[in-house]
Image 1 (cartoon, rainbow, N blue to C red):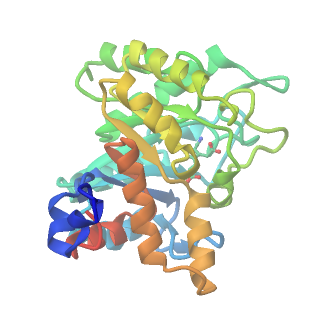
Image 2 (tube, rainbow, N blue to C red):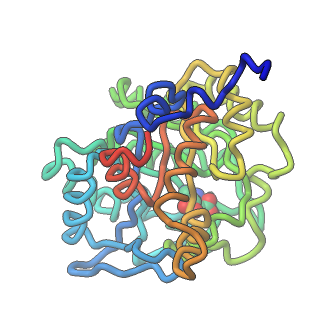
Length: 327
Ligand code: PBG
């Protein structure tokens, strides 16, 4: 048989396959999104996200311990306040829920890297990601509140802030306020290319943050667009973002792939609540192998070019990496 090139030669054993593997993964690339609620002594399961919970500050430790033990060492905190108002004032309150969680984690877990989601939608009574002028989400007024929120997170102990609102100019506004206050070394991860996606459904149940009218299409991106994603990413690079995120992950890996050669910054992909919920639901029915699917989804995001991966499976993935099931 005249066949000199035989790709199967390099697939002949587990050891060799591992030697020639192109995509290497490490638990330090994983970020775990965590929901914090007010009160004490409560761990509430999120119905549309089995095995994911909302924690009161005093109950966070068990999950944090488990994450650290598995080898995952960064979290993205989301606050769910008990009181919401028109201007989302609990987002930047000194004793707001995220601020309380940050102080707790900073003191008890110095080895944990603390990131915080900066947005208004969990805090506003109308569920939109900014302040309203009639039915319109006012861009420039919102910037002030976002910057104030980011500053209050950093003052409470956040190591990195991640604005997810999709207002124009928020990276610059946040960078300026942090710098003026002496936080020149605190990085900003921008949810730069964030699509208006139905994959966020379960998150909105978890955070009670579904908009009370309309949708988010006047600020989050139209999912038919790729060039616009490049524009968004480039603008945020210019404004001083330190990391560029694409969100969701699974259906948007073409965007990660497109941006990778264009951007000199680390990139992040967020495997969102709907992706998690779909895997869970199919696994519960016995239709797919949850662990294998979770590994395959993560590897594909890294293969597309992301450096960081936000996932509700952070603990399980870190365990799989240890066992050599991925990576
Ligand atoms: C806040 C925010 C959302 C998510 C992350 N930050 C919800 C939204 O934009 O509606 C979604 C995360 C997920 O679905 O896992 N703006």
